[in-house]
Image (cartoon, rainbow, N blue to C red):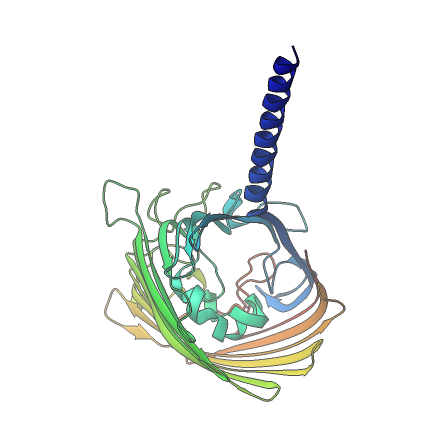
Length: 400
């Protein structure tokens, strides 16, 4: 009897030990995984002096940074590998509506694998290489937001659209040098219909940062399943509907003490644009419909950090647009855009800011109307009835 009790005790102890190891293993595995909830709310008051001939006073959400919430997570797979994901939803604070044409996770939605040695591979709805590598050198893509975007955000440096069905690779940092690229599928039997290719690189060493990027989209917004697609409410996800959209550019930032100086050049070509995005550019009858739109954007920007909590930034962009009509004629409006912003941090997560922008168009030629619009946010601005427009904003931003 004692022998049987002793055997039972040993068995119970083995079971408890094994169970304890299993619980410890589960706990360790759990500790190697993480899911983080994050978000940002950007809300303020805007004044625009001329929208179709009238002043506009409005509350506006997400002008410098789009209001959003989301989840990101990772799981350690061992050997320097990790499974990662991100789901990010944009929204409008004023009415609670989803952003990005009503998508549940319209800002980003992807899953992939990250390696400490070889970089990151992700699949889903993601930013292109212009946004990843070049936009951060512009005023609008780093600290200024939509009010400082190039006319109509023609080069997507203000994230007007993301790419669906995208396979994306981003390298690790090689002593300051990083690069990446992506391919976004059409998801259509016509393989080339609404597909996109993008690539970019950036080098940062001390005070100097330089970058270059390229994006090529065939038939953006041509269907609902493609790389740049028609949204759930029927509106286009991208800036334009055209036979082809090409964007390329380069830029440089240089830091001297508390000042950061920047220069960026981008070029956008649109072949046979067919949507209403350029309705304000309505050409004189003599030019006919647009066979080609070209934008050359030259931006100078300066940011001065007076204290860790307070900075002032300014920018000037010169944009030359070429409108090629179906009759063979051309028009070349020239845009001059100025912007100024001041930002003060109340805490690590909350700041107050004020900004203003002014745009004037010259040499409109045969183009009827200025096609002028300071902000890319359709909730707060629209084309001016003259060749100039002014906009100002006071806002609060909170991150969590």
